[in-house]
Length: 413
Image (cartoon, rainbow, N blue to C red; front, side, top):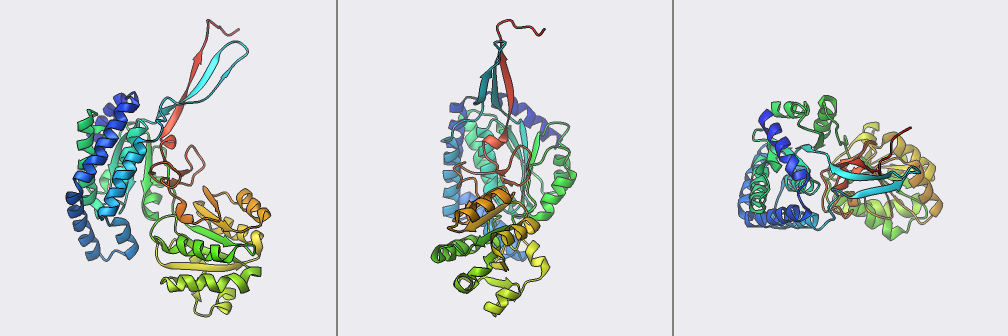
C-alpha cells in the first residue's frame, strides 16, 4: 500500500499539467479498450455473479453487480462523455482587480491523489478512473471482494488505454488485494500521499470510512429519499413519478424509500399510486391513515422511516400538507435526495427553501440523482456533507483552487 501511494503521488505531478488533448486521447483509448475487452469483462463478471448468488446476495445487490453488453457499452459511452466535457483544470473561476492595481484570479487545480473505496458496483472502476484522469488526479481504487474479478478486468482495459495514450500506468491503480487491512492503510492517507477519500457502498462501509479516515472524506451514509405528493399534484404525473422513483432500479441510492401523501389528497391520490406500486411488485408499509384507506398495506414501524430498503419496499405516511412533509423529511432524511410533486408554486417554494438535502426535485423522479443525468458524464458518488463537494461528485468537485495574483511592482505599506 505504501508503494501504491508513492506511485500515485509520482503520477499525479505530470498528470496535473497534462494537456486537455492528452487526457482526452487517453479517455477515448480507454473507452475503446473497454469495448475490446467486452468478452473478458463479461466472463469476469460471471464469476462475481456466481459467487454473489452462492453468498445469497439480495436481488438489489446482484443488480448493482451485474454487467451485460448494454451496461458495458454504457461504461464506454460514459468515458467518452467525460472526454467531451470541458477540462476544469486551469479554469478561471472568477477574477477581479484591486484599487492598488493587483489583478486576482481564482483558478481550479487538481486535488492530487484520490482514494475510492467501493462495493458491488464494478462500473465505479471506470467512472472514478475517468473522472479523476480528466480532472488531473491520480486515483487509487479499492473495489470490494464481491466485484473483484469485474473490477480487475475493467481496470486492465483502462491501463491499456493509458499506455496507448502515453500517460503513466500509475495514473489509475487498483489495490490488488481484497484484504480489509488494505482499506485501513488507505484511510491513513498513506503517509500523506492521499488527499481525499471517496467511499461508495453500504452504510457500514461509509460509517467506517468516516470514523477512521485521517484525510478528508466525500461521503453519504445512505440514500433515504422521499417524495411528497401535494394536493395540487397532477394525478397521472404523480403516479408515474412515484412508480419510476421506486421501481426503475430499487438498489441505487436515488431510489425512493418513503412516500408522503398530503392528507387532503388522501381520497384522490393515494389509492392510484399504491395500486401502481403493488402492480409492479412493491411491498407497501403504511401508517394508520394509509392502512385505513388501503388495507393491504403492512404496518410501518418507526424503524421504517429510517430504513434505506434498496429493495421493492416503500414506507408511506400521510402528512398535513407541505408543513407536515417538511417536518417529516427534516426529521428522518439522510440529506441525499427529496422530491415534491405539486402544481402549487408556494408549496414548491417552501419545499426548496426549508429542506436542506443535497438534491431537491420538483415534478421529477428521484432516480435523476445521478451525475450522468446532471450532465457531468458520470460521478464518483453523491456527497451529502456541506464542505467543498455536495451532491454528485464530478469533475469540478474533484478540483480545489488556488489564487493567482499579478502585480506591477506593488509593495504593501
